[in-house]
Image: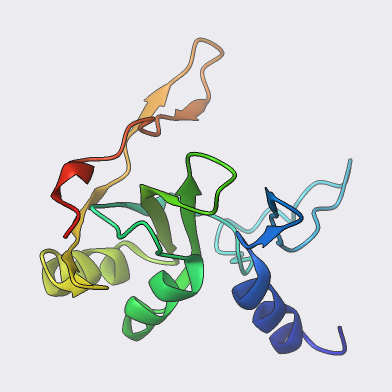
Length: 151
């Protein structure tokens, strides 16, 4: 891509789409064996941050582009819809990361219970647990919340 904006547009358009019966992931490449700068303020587009929301009760047809648009007023750093099978149907939940806790809290207070694709979404902060090596390990739910509410 010629610019970061073009790359982000490609990610937004193509991430989590089906190609030849398989769901593809499109994201920025990661450098191997090269440490990140020591600054903890570094924000890399399309990277999940520690200010991450768990979004549940998503419509089966929801895509990352829908979430990005829904949360756009709160400057999401990354969005991800989880898929349970290769048919292209969402698992009913996803994650949205923000650069700051303030943006994440504002999104929760404004958007929790609002409708996205005719379904009231539920928002809560994604939980993390310490793993045995002393680092943090993400705990992500394997099951969607209340998917039997599909209209």
